Every structure is written in C-alpha cells, then in structure tokens.
Length: 231
Ligand SMILES: Cc1cc2nc3c(=O)[nH]c(=O)nc-3n(C[C@H](O)[C@H](O)[C@H](O)COP(=O)(O)OP(=O)(O)OC[C@H]3O[C@@H](n4cnc5c(N)ncnc54)[C@H](O)[C@@H]3O)c2cc1C
Image (cartoon, rainbow, N blue to C red; front, side):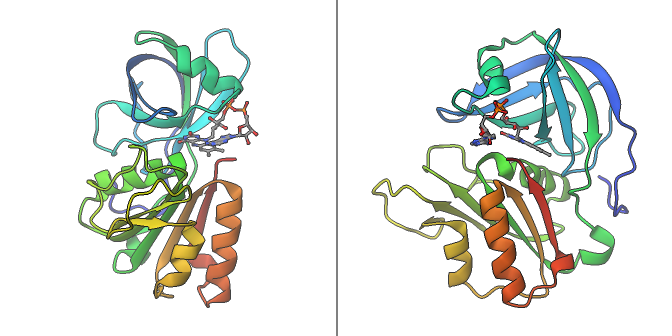
C-alpha cells in the first residue's frame, strides 16, 4: 500500500495481457479481470486498453486495490459505443494491448489523512473509489455518493460504511438509509457538507460541473476538489 505518496511517479508500460474473467454485474455493467503485466500503480490511476489490430483504444480506471494480483476494470457497455461493443463480445483468453498506469486522481495521504473524504461518482465512476477503499481500508473517513439511473446491482453498499446510492429513475422501492431518489447534487444539497473536507468527483461531465459549482458556492476551497471526467 503506497502510504507515503502524494503523486504517483510510476513507469507506464506497454504490454499484452490476457482476459482472465468477464462477469456482468447488471445488464450493462461489466467487471473485467485481466492479467497484471507486472506494473505497480496507485489507487485512482487508469490504464489504456485496445484490441490487437484495432486502432481505437480507451481509458479505464483500475477497480482493484494496489495489493491485488490481477487488474479489474468496471466498464459500462454503452449502446452503440465503438469500443464497449467489442468488449461486450470478447472472451476469456482474448488478448488486449495494455498501457499504463496513467493519471494522478489519487489520494494525498500526507496532507489529507485526517480530513473527511467525499467520493462522488456517477455510474462506473465508482471504480477508482472502490480501489481507494480496497487499498486504504479503514485509514480514511469516506462518505460515498453514487449516482445511478437504476438500482440494478452495480452498486457497492457492502463495501463502504457510508454509502448513499442516488437513483435518478424511481423504481418504486422505498428510500432508506442507503437509497435516495434523485440526483447526486440534490442529495448533496440536503446534507451538511464539511467544507474542510476533500472532494473527489468522477464520472460524467454534467454531474462534475454541477457538483463543483455547488461546492465552490458553499465555500469549499477549489483546491480541495479533484476531478476525473469519463465523458
Ligand atoms: C481517465 C478516464 C477513465 C475512464 N474510466 C472508465 C471506467 O473505469 N469505466 C467506464 O465505463 N468508462 C471509463 N471511461 C470512459 C471510457 O474510456 C470510454 O469512453 C467508454 O467506455 C465509451 O467507449 P465506447 O468506445 O464504447 O463509446 P464511444 O463510441 O467512444 O462513445 C459513444 C457515446 O457514449 C458516451 N459515453 C461514454 N462513456 C459513457 C458512459 N460510461 N455512460 C454513458 N455514455 C457514455 C460518449 O459520450 C459518446 O456519446 C474513462 C474515461 C477516461 C477519460
């Protein structure tokens, strides 16, 4: 576990890896397990994968903890998406080109260990936060807000102690301690936010833009807001 680390300075590698497992957590969310080609990474980083002989590649956050032997990715299969349509049909044993790790959407343990961490995601934007939790276990005070369209199984109530899933399509279930019906930003507006906390925002641009604006308006220091935009 990389405890003494503010910024990853890890060497990016370009390798070929095998798909070891492929499991759907919901109709459209795939958990893909691939070989680790011998890299070390910092939780929050992403890799770039492509299929042999294809020109397109895509970035994916690492879902695994730093100490795990394999690399897992949490991937939304996008309707008519070029790359995810191919991934949807791939098989265990297929080969992928692998580049990385890249990025610095990582925790700053040295400066922020004692601060409250708000981890705010839409959809598969939860992936780097699962990696944080697996790596830092009980070290950090996390509060997780996870925006999803449907509460369909690709949520992670069992992993985080403080986890609220914000469901935008009301499926008739009652709200409870884990479920809020509405957008992440609406939930955020309904709670008292610790302005001295640190905020990690990951997923779609609209949510990130809306949440960042709200946080800055209520007095959060923009330097305490970290962002990873997927699309
Ligand atoms: C740093 C980084 C990390 C990323 N990590 C992840 C990750 O861990 N998991 C993951 O699922 N994606 C992640 N992405 C997005 C991913 O790289 C691809 O863009 C995504 O898989 C769509 O690729 P595609 O070729 O199938 O779709 P494309 O053919 O490129 O796009 C089709 C359409 O789908 C939209 N779209 C893209 N992603 C989504 C989505 N998740 N939900 C709904 N619509 C979408 C695009 O805006 C576009 O309009 C990440 C992106 C970045 C930049």
